Length: 630
Image 1 (tube, rainbow, N blue to C red):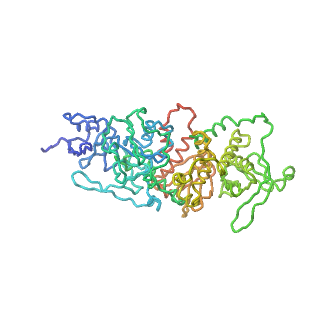
Image 2 (tube, rainbow, N blue to C red):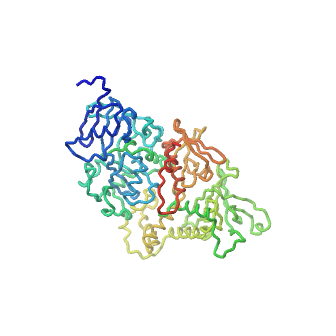
Image 3 (tube, rainbow, N blue to C red):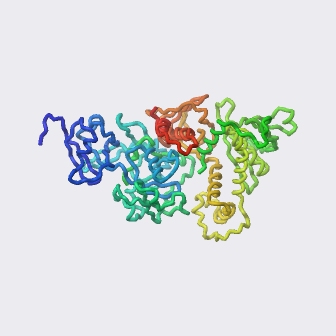
């Protein structure tokens, strides 16, 4: 039948549930909601409420039902998919367990994470996100330099066209009316490490209950577990139906899961692992995925509370004198091509400054030989208990805040001396003096950590070392270092905590984890504006660090409290951060610059949270800080 002069045309729509392509006669001023009603067959009633139109060529969802086809740019040569918005996604938790979850693929990734966290009863969803599965090939090269590859898209009628590979991170929209993406991560196949769909799995045996063909509206709502560490969760169920305890991690991951782990060997490989993070402003489908305790932030909030309320006084109520710390220590300022050792000085710590004198008498009547301002410095422990080594490495910013950091080493004689001075240096780096109420607790935590590291010789433990699999506890690097002594060292460490409760043991583990030098630092390979040399950028919860690519040494540190603004030139993928004294401009090579933007904005967003348990998550503010569009 030929239609003349009625301004109508044929539109092809593929219904994924029925695997049927329909051809409808439509007008350009017809709205999307009416088009979906026209698709529904009244003779075959079915719940289509979870379905929406997906435009594969443009890689966007058409979810604005009041928009017309002309407004979104749909024409006669387009092919649309009528598909469910909720699909099955395999998610790997931090303890390496896999969950098959029903996730909304049509909303932005941040909202999908919030909904999933709510279903799983996980607090603070703003601290989590989805990351694409990585393989060893991703660590061999900076994916920011990879060429954009075309992906063949097969239509039901046999035609094949090429579409740009979908991007995981780019925020530049293809269409002005709908958000889209271009390409930065050259990966079309799906893996099974961090965040992967269900359908492509062929290497791992699957139980019948976890088949990807399960209807979207399945009423079962239960967990189905297998020996390979997988579990299925239907998010439409209530929490009372759970058969899996998320709070109790498995004793050890399965060999299949462990074999898939990607282990970076160098700092640059560690930086390249951040290429897989999904863009929180785009939906999961737009980024290439198809159907298939006490932490840094709490510490930052405590610091903010102390700053607002003022430091608490000591128990004796003495407000006439600021506490000081003084003792004989050894000092070294390392230089290239020198063989000088440590030199003994009398150290006096007052008002965030370290004063060095030749003798204790000089501290009472003479000027210091060396004065070091510890505010904003980087503090790194250098301890070897077996050798009796208690050293503190300080990277001190220059006085004018221009130029690289200056490295100095301090060596203590005893464990008690180290705990006091290490605690003082850590507080000073945050701008807090010895009058701060957290000083004593910091000293206590350092002493506890040193105690945990001491081997408990002769401890009565009824465990056969041969029954301990060191692979479950140690990295391959530590296994090679300890050789055949790994199991015995594990039992010696266990003897220090075997009398603690489960909660206390976890807290001790978290404290030891947080005391590591590189805790909470995410790395990126960058090039500063005007420089050809590749460098590392470390992003932490309270600072940004310029680091050496080979050694990881801190060249310069910028604190968030000195940051005035930050923005991104999306055309050239270049980021600029404005500080009080300088502007920093760089381009990211190991990931899209949107990832760096989200890390910085996300940390600032989390520092703005209050301690109220009933605080509502401000999604609009999150996207303002991380989206890069205002």
